Length: 176
Image (tube, rainbow, N blue to C red; front, side, top):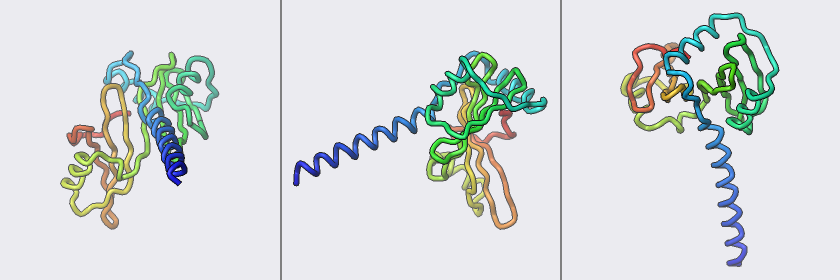
């Protein structure tokens, strides 16, 4: 009986370690330092204002993407030849990532659950809008910054607030 418990403990630990490593690699890819935060903002803004087209990628871009997000599925790419946007899912979660033409990861956006929101960020949002309920949360990692887009609702009223990882409320929507 003791042997069976040890085997179950070992199997549970191995499964947990595997899940954590898969989740960690999916959630924390290395962001390129080639571009400054303001350069990234300009590149993304230009991308969003341009005509984009669906594309299939290969080479360094494809290789880097597979390294950053090894468990991605339902992958869809668009480009304006300067920036590549990829939308995909990992474990039924929506992601977006932006790469430059050299295959450098500029930023990624991950749909997260309310429970995954850092407590300091959740507290700031609740203090700002005390009667509102958190409806949807995105974690955005851009250059050296991590911030959260939090959509909140109260009956017919919706608000969106952007809060940095350190709890600072951003006074305007960050460009991403």
